[in-house]
Image (cartoon, rainbow, N blue to C red; front, side):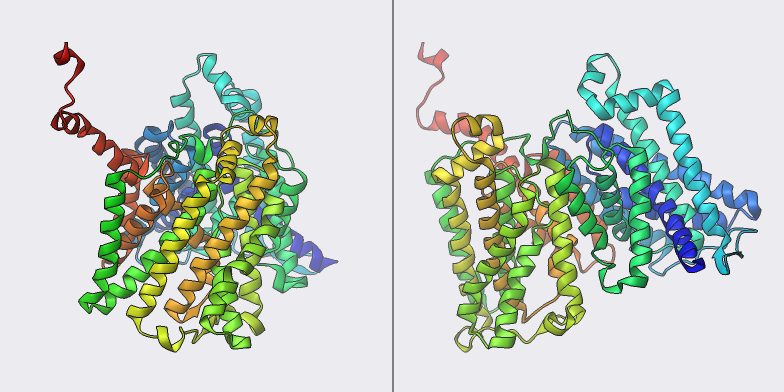
Length: 627
């Protein structure tokens, strides 16, 4: 009995720090609808800033004063991020804000490395609280009990704020219907900034309070953000009490899972989130969202139209360059071009469901990496030739997408996105832990092309043919009656159903097709690299695909191609510098702020500046002159 009590208290202590971070994110999303992936960076900054302050402020007062000052400092940093980066793009599609916050992650990561160095920092013990307490024969760290009390104090303080103050009432009202709050005369700009400060303050407190238990390191941001989003989704977007209950649930499952089912710890919380989303999409304590979630379709893609003469000439010139460049006998350039073509196909497959279908996936890499593993497993165990393995990979990835999509298309908006994330983590954990078959973290090695394609140049041309063919197929499918039906489900579900379109079946078919095309890209990747590892199914790879699509622009089918090319070239160019993430993050933020329509949208806007000049040269005089 004592063992279970000790484990229960350990889980509650872990839930305390998790709740502090998750409550801040829940408030931010509930009011502003910003999918703030930089929230984990605020948590990391809280740990680093607290480490610095605790080295200068000594004693009990200094320790707790450092935690409070850290919260204020991180709150101010979050306030600056909101004003400088997010405020200019609040009217843009909400997932553009996701890309901007991902740029913030890159910037904060390198700034933290520059200031505090790459090594892990060990936090000092809380004065007077570094011992243990014996409960039922089991030693429980005293600081764990303090964290439990701290989380309860913060929960009580937030309840008082939201139920006994005018500001809290406005925040709760904005969580339920922010448009009505604005109609009543409330300054939404000030409200959003205040909420962002509060959420960042709580994240800073969470990072500082866990410092005596875990220290500070540069991986804290990505290590915590998945758990935080799981907690917020399970508890219900905007529900503080829901965030507390979900934090306890997730933390206890993790603690007891380590003891009882060690193999389940990587995926257990995602399985719980998937179950909750399927049974109750708004979360345990959430309410159905009355504010339309704009997602990726707030700015609808332009109507499909045939490629004009200039477009055909540009495409022909690009194809000619891609064919001739490998003949320069530059092996590095050949490998780089292969990577670009493969990622263009990967990004285009995501764009098909995001831009054309309005379905935002946070787990598309599961099918990209899944296709790579299908091809590798056939070669590894059945000695399948490369040609057949490439053909089978999209079938395997498409089948996985069919199963996942059957659950996901029941939801929409951010709930759809989070359910795809949950299933992708389940697939990743299976690949990572099924060591006997997939090799686990060691991956699968020595998966090379057939003899006739063993030359890097020959294989590049194979990649170019298949990759370009896949992109053309995606574009062709967008122009078919099925593609127009998919656009109809994106623009108005009610109208689509009214004219007889089976919305869920169309979305499921599109999701399956996009997953198969991502698997095709994955199969090309595994033979290009000669190996495959679980990282190709990870959240990071899914976010890379999202950034490629949004950088290029969701309004155009050429957007993902441009975005993937630029993103890959930027990574390759900047990676030679020590702080390359800082430069890449700044570039991403600037593109999102200055050109929310993406690179292709920005190019189209420039092209319109020259249209009057082109008409004049063609002899088309303005109407005033004709008169």
